[in-house]
Image 1 (cartoon, one colour):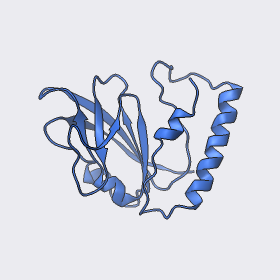
Image 2 (cartoon, helix red, strand yellow):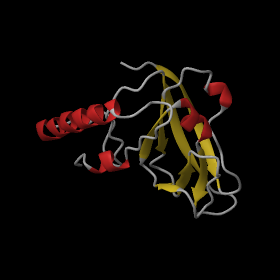
Image 3 (cartoon, rainbow, N blue to C red):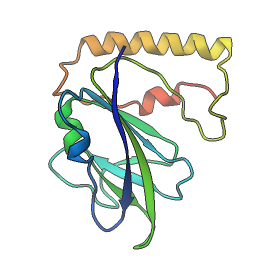
Image 4 (cartoon, helix red, strand yellow):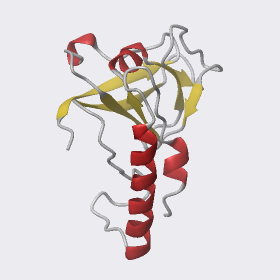
Length: 158
């Protein structure tokens, strides 16, 4: 199982894109989960390449959505900017760093209490999705690939 290496909060504004703090990435980071705070009014735009996102250009992540990124280079290059809002607005992106990629399915659905239990149908679906992800991870060369969980999150029922 992967070990958590650290946590940080990114305060994302519309003025300038923000990246993970280099002090939080001391080496050996294989995976990060970026989670847009569900209480936020605005989503964010994300890019993991050398081009910075803009408020209208980049991968959109709405409040309550998350993405996991594999590969230290992809994590270090990740940049976020506010998708909407004005000069005084911001959104918090929560980040957890891990030392290796294990498939850990987590549901951060808005409205569901953090201690809610999965029923049998949801648990069976979660096992099926996890098995699919494990098969896909075997095909990916870590460090050069980008893994997104947006489609995966859509498959978990409320």
